[in-house]
Image (tube, rainbow, N blue to C red):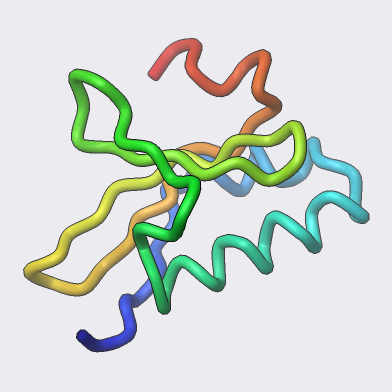
Length: 87
């Protein structure tokens, strides 16, 4: 299996601006690792949707996987309290 390319929805830039820099480095590192393994241990498929989520501290990274095209699209990054609202 090849390396997946990463894509971000435009709204993710706004999500990332609100996160403290110390946490932001960890989150971006976690997103980068999704390119090598889009379904790491600890990831969960969201019920009723074709999205997955991984946890990074108190933050959640929601993303979609296109296996046929080898693309991981990050949909949302948010605090766990707000991650699942308004999907």
